[in-house]
Image (tube, rainbow, N blue to C red):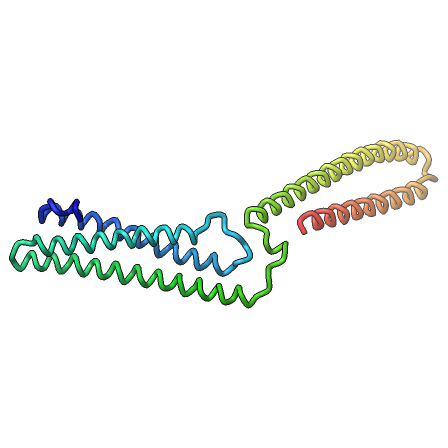
Length: 228
């Protein structure tokens, strides 16, 4: 109050406007913080990375001090206000703004206090959480990240194995083609070998189909296990 004693009407009015703008912005953040604190409180088993409860209490004390300061400014303005209807209207408007801010502040505070009391009652009637439930959110994220990293390594290994198997099968197919070309040359010279070549080709196609099916099933099962 001593800092306001030597202030004029216009100085007090400017200070009130600046203080009202500051309170208005802080009330918006205060309300959002109260809602985020309520959402965090729904899952008491997971500790938040930032303690929004402490932030809410700190901002509550700061807002209460600002509201008290604005109330003192309004009282001082009423004492120094020059006579006239315009001045009276200005003082009334500042007091109405202060009342709106106080109501919004009280409403948000009461909502958070009621939610905290409800959580205390529920916490008192529920059994203590298990060790696994006590993991922090950061620990859970780290555990999930390690699991994903291990899965990626396993998938890469299986893809490399599949590519090596594919190269091996391609090499075998080329070898079979060369052998088939030689046999075709022989069968052209010896027609009696056509029946034997037909059976050999049928067995080769059957073996290739079986190998391809087995490799495909193994690759699918490994990928399914890795992403399970």
